[in-house]
Length: 123
Image (cartoon, rainbow, N blue to C red; front, side):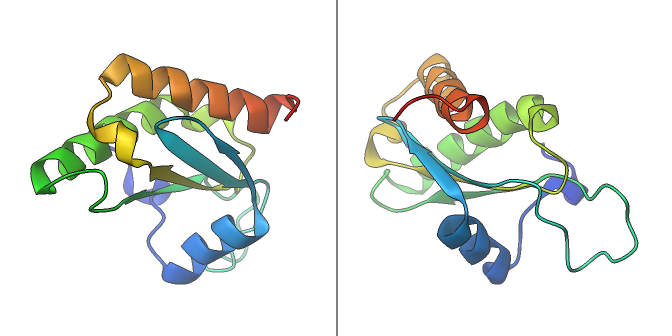
């Protein structure tokens, strides 16, 4: 489970990450990243935590499939939260193919998207 301080919950924060951040798409998911953003809800902290949120629509599948995809993505992001700059806002949006993908495929796509966003890969 992703710790509470690393969860993205406010609608405004999701919108900020999607509209003002960079994005990288893969066959099963799209990652939106707004790096180094200061947290307006926690004044006085020197290094705000990285916060991540997930969007899994009905296009991915039924409720059971959507929840499975969300659990897998939360687990994958939890293991990679330390690679983001402090204060980053991350939104992972699952595409319809994510429902049929296994854990390894989601991990490969997430790593490739993060490599492109954080490593400055070519488009």
